[in-house]
Structures are given as structure tokens and as C-alpha cells.
Amino acid sequence: MEQLSIAGSFLLAPRIHTDDRGQTLEWFRGAEFAGDLGHRLALAQANLSVSRRGSVRGVHFADVPPGQAKYVTCVRGAVLDVVVDVRVGSPTFGRNNPVDLDDRNRRALYLAEGLGHVFIALTDDATVVYLCSQPYAPDREHGVHPLDPALGIPWPDGIEPLLSAKDAAAPSLAEAEAAGLLPDYRTCLAYQQSLPG
Picture 1 (tube, helix red, strand yellow):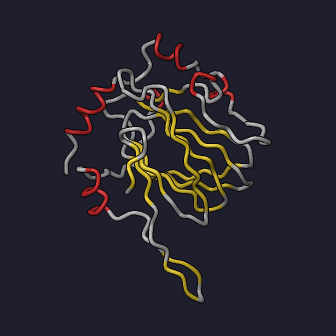
Picture 2: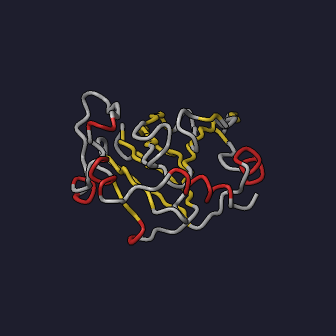
């Protein structure tokens, strides 16, 4: 696992075994994952989304505790996946870290509780699979407008972003902070340290 520039986010590049039949790989191994993170990833829900080119999903995050850690990979097509630090008090608050996930590199992205997550589909039928530490709970879920210039996300040229009505109505980062919607960095760290190893 490679630590990204935002604490609590990691990129995994699995070993891909190829032969005449195709490919096989292990994209998640609980014991090794726990060894790298210092705690295990509780699996409470698995999601799959299929998106047409230009579809944007996010920036989403959940109240901490318990938050919702995510382990994300793209099994068909390609996406630009972005970690956004929405944790008030974090040294990297408001920054983003984009990574390419696709069906060739087979990389996976881990986001700890409290981090924001968004992606844009770079191909039609981009299929993304998420393992989640907590089930979806609408009363604890929040968002930040993905096109907020303050986030500085490097959206790809030549692709018109397509947002859901909910994401299009999401507040800016500054509005979300003023409304008290954003997670606290120290609370996030304390919660992650309390997770079983």
C-alpha cells in the first residue's frame, strides 16, 4: 500500500497474474490490509455503481463517529477518483488527491473515515465497486459541491460533468464548514485509533 498525500488515504497496486485464460488478482486481503493500516476494515456493505462518461458521484462523506471508510476499485472502464480532505483542522484541509482507477491497472483506493470521496467516469459503463465499513445512513451522510473552485479538483478537459440533483445542490466547502457539517480531524483520528487491529 502506498500512502497518498492526504493522511488516511492509500493506493494499492495489486500483482496481476496473467496467462492464456486472462488475469487473476487479489484486490483485498484482510490480514495484510490490517497490517498496513494498523486496524482491520470492517465490511458492512458492498456497493457497485455503473456510470456513463462524465458522470460525477460525490463529494460524499459521513459523520464521524462512525463515519464510513471505503475501499474502491474500478472493475470496468476508467474513472478519475479523488480523495478530498474535508476534516476541519487537518493539515491538508481542502486539498485533494486524484488517482486513475481502471480495468487495466486494477488499483484500489482506501479512504479513512471522515475523508470526502468523488469520482468522474472517463468511459461509458464505468463500473466501480466499493467495500464500506458502515452501511449507508442518509441522516449521517453529507456532501460538498464537486465543482467548488475552492477544492481545486483537476477535472479532465473535454468531459462535461454530469451531476445528480443532490450533488448539484450540495454546499460549497466554506458553506459546509459554516453549517457545521464537516468532520473534525482530531475526532476522526481518535476514532480510527479506537478500531480493532
